[in-house]
Image: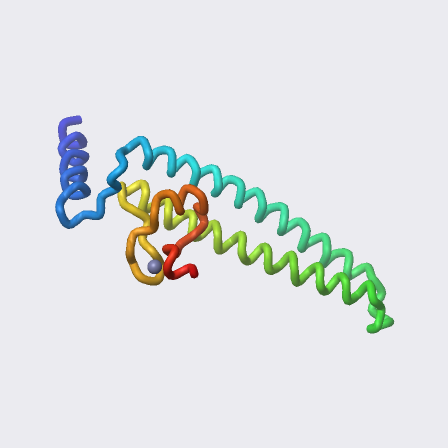
Length: 140
Ligand SMILES: [Zn+2]
């Protein structure tokens, strides 16, 4: 399809134009970063499913526990476990959102922009910490 080819060429030109923020290291590195991000998305999705099961099990378990005695130490432990699992779940969902944003930028052939200052995040940092959405300076 000649039309499609023209489109790709045009997009490419826009991406590599002087105003575009280009990844300096070449397509292979974008591909390997994308692979890292995709693997992390998969891992985080599994983690969310597991945490949801944990939270559901804790909720279910706490319903079985008698609430007659409010000073039951087991009740406190369950509340703590539930809060902890919920916090992990929230974090995992935030990670998944951040990964989706990172992936979109990489797929457009761009550097990953810092959520706070808008500057490019080092690719080494993205590779090591794919869920990050802030540059080293802003994360500190
Ligand atoms: Zn920043």
